[in-house]
Image 1 (spheres, rainbow, N blue to C red):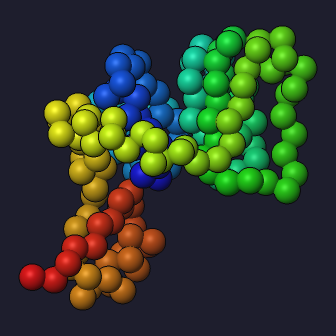
Image 2: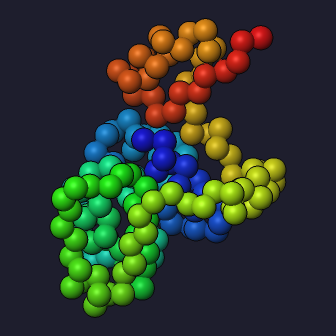
Amino acid sequence: ASVSLYAGLAARALGATRIILADARASVRAEAERLGFAATSPAELGGPPTAALVVDASATAPGLRLAVERTAEDGICSSVGSLHAKVTLPFSSMFVRNVSVHVGRTQARSVIPQVLEHVETGRLRPQDVTTALAPIDDAVEAIEAHMRGESTKTVLTAAD
């Protein structure tokens, strides 16, 4: 859940003024709203595609297809979820709308200086996504709570 929230923070830091997060989980939508994003469920993403940049972090084939379908003309859909053995994409529609799909991770080394600059100036605040902090000595309990609860990002800290 945290990947889509980080993507929204990065988009805002780069100047996006309208960020919509679609997630089936109410707890993730609540976190998105807390961060100042519009939040909706994927089922409510009706209407024509309007987003020039769409990030698919669903890690599902239907999620990737929906993300591509919501990408506007001349837009880019970036899938960071995972690869799928079988996924059907609307290639004819993508061709007509000139939609590009990027699958994979970014070349992190090349953008680290810009990311750090945004963090240093306060335009990017990744710590805002963290919903739980726990000492490393409590890792087992913290991760179990993370997996069973509604925490979107658990960070383990070094012992004092």
